[in-house]
Image (tube, rainbow, N blue to C red; front, side, top):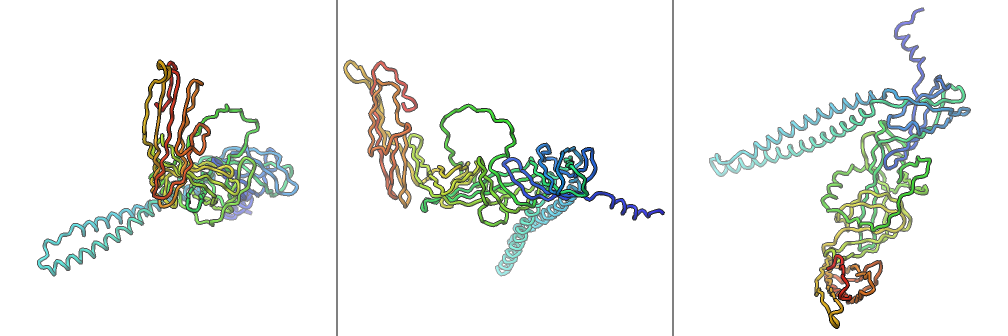
Length: 508
């Protein structure tokens, strides 16, 4: 009995094993990678290691770190092997190429329309009224010109919006195509060998994927009138696994721990840490303008879980396409804060708004870029991170509160019998002006002179007196009324033997 070609093809298809179905059950994104948990099931096939489930992982996955557990009763995973094979993403690449071509056609059409309407608007602008024979004719011509120009400009604006829209769609399609083509080369074919035969098998997998991760993005707003700082954390997420994810998503604040040997001990160096002052506002505006669009998600905070040295934020179920960055909200937190204007007159007239944060609960927020605001006004951009319940944050210089250091006297001389001593004197007045309509708390800091020889005598005089002197600093804590000025006098007198050669440091 001979089978027809169509019937023969049907029989052959029935003889082929059904493909393995894979479902992502959870994704944990770390700063530069992701840990994917999958459930796979399908028919088993014979292999040199015995009955096995054959599945495919993206090339960016690490098969060496794959952990597998059988879910089918009576089966246990006895071995894992893998090899490189051509990627099955070719169909997706072909579809994306069609999308790019369609988007390019739409963009070209929108560009041509916008340019034609721009020429039409230029025509109406170039018309003149010099040839109108009478005032009445001139009035009618002017009305016609205005109507024609308004219509042309309106259509031109709409065409320009459409051009920008199609241009963004084209750019997005090109980015997705580039990502898919990068994954279109090779993939991993993984064999899960089992201890016994079974027509079908189900297993749970956990593996790490490179070219994925998340970056924190903060919005830190000072609210001095309320004594609060509002913190908003968003996650900029990118995944390049070559597969779409539709699963519960978690964010971990540290990379996954994979080492099996203890790390080496670094040198212990203790030195001052530079303060991170906000950068100029224009850069912050540019950063905000280039940020990925917010996804439409609920405003509730992500559920946080602590795992010893790091924290994990649960964002719930999310759909993430490969090669398409998104920004998702993680948490919003309001912290109590004490605000002061930090003043260092010897370093300049600026006063820096500083907030001392106090949180009700400990937070673990990784370092990341931040936009800083004061009462809704952009102050600048910088870096922000937090570990624990307390933090110190700067919000830039306040232009309405300034401090001028005026030198009253400075000089040196010799005194005593037969000029056996030498003297130096420094005297300043710090003029702190508050041009705000509310009182401000200010903290003036100046370095204390520190003698490194017992023969050097120092006399320090301050009016008003210093609040305290600690850690090499003279500190004044003041409250300046609105639209008022507070003066501080700071005098230093030095006496030393005439034959003692002095290095006066940076204040000469």
